[in-house]
Each structure stands twice: as C-alpha cells, then as structure tokens.
Image (cartoon, rainbow, N blue to C red; front, side):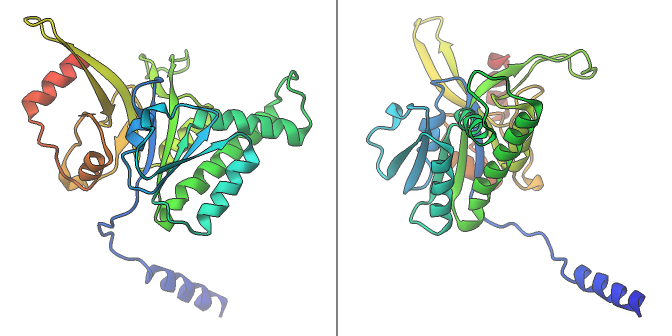
Length: 274
C-alpha cells in the first residue's frame, strides 16, 4: 500500500511539469566598476518611480534632478530590513537600487558585531565571518526576489581585481568582479540575470587630436571579467559591450534583440579594449 501511494505521489509531481516559455520578467542586475564609471547613472535610466537606497555611498550627484527618482539614506542594518518589508507590502515603485553592496557588507559587519557583542577593535572570528556571509546572502536573495513582486532590482558594487592563487592551476589571469567576500560575490553572480562591468573608454583622433570619452558596459562573456546577460539561446551571443548603456538597450538585448552593431565594429571595439 505504501509503495502504491509513493508511486502515485511521484506521478502527480511529474504531471506538474510544464513547457519553458519566454516570460517577460523584471530584471535583476549587478553593476560593478570603479567609482565614477556610471553605475548610478545607468541605474537611474530604469523604469520610474525608482527608489535608490544610498547605503553610505553619497554618490548621487550625477542623478540630481532626474524625474521619478527618490532616495533613502541607509545608515544601519535595521533600516535596510525595514525598507524591504515596506516594499514587500506593496508600493508604487517600479525599480529598487541598492547603492552599493560593498557598503551593505560593511553595515552587515557592524550588525554582526553588535549582536555578537564584538568590539570594533576586536578581531572578527571565523564564525562571525560565516554569519556575515549568511546574512548578506539571505538579504541579497530577499531583495532579488522582489522581482516576483514586479520590481526591477539593481545591485551596485565597487570593483575588485583578484589575483590567481597557486592552487588555481587553470587560471593564470586575474579575475575582476564585485568587491565582496568571495562567498557573497559568487552568490550574487548566480542570483542575478544580468552582470555588467562599467568602465570608461577614451578615444583619440590622431588627425584632429580630439578626445572622446565613452561610458561603457561590458556584458558579453569574458575570460576574467564577471559579465553575463540571460537571453534566448536562439538569439545568438550578446554584444561584448554597450556604449552609453541604458535600461532600454539592456532590455532589448535580454529579449534577444540587437543594437545594430556590425561584426566589423565589434572587432574594432574588442581590439581597442585589449
């Protein structure tokens, strides 16, 4: 009798399998790069009303006067949780930006010190590092899951270059990603649908000696830069970079579209980057 019940249970679960279809979902994005490379400016192009959580960053001067953008300055961990639950209960906002994760990790460390009764000058134990990693992953996932409630969710982070270790036999070049604990960085990379590296490219015309500065976003697969964008496989490979990136351009690529860049232009862009 038990075997029959078990078989019936398994069959009913298998009956719930469904075809995978193209569903239009809000974006979950990680933007990382050096300071001043356009992370906050890009985030502000996302659908409005937009709520920006300024986590000890104070880097919002570039988006002063942008219609539909509001800011909350987050100075402690409890405030971060309070904002989440308010958004979860429902709001008119369409986009939530956490600016930035590196400072959020610092707040998390202060929070762990407080609940573990660890003084600021005392060493952080291995156990507390583990608690911090778990705390960060828990709340990054919670905010990422706000996409289920219709919000676009963007995480900004500073950039970190990590040199290969001796045990990394297959990795001879440095890796570039978000400036977070290794476990947290790996987690957020897997949690989001888009990872973009912001950088500034300078071009000079030898004839006119003029100088052009371009704000760029690296989203194509790269040997050592963390970058990705999920889109239908039938659409082919995404472009390596987007010049003057915006929500509209990223959305078009994620839906399988193209920005109209020719292969010849792409080769030139890659050559310049190298």
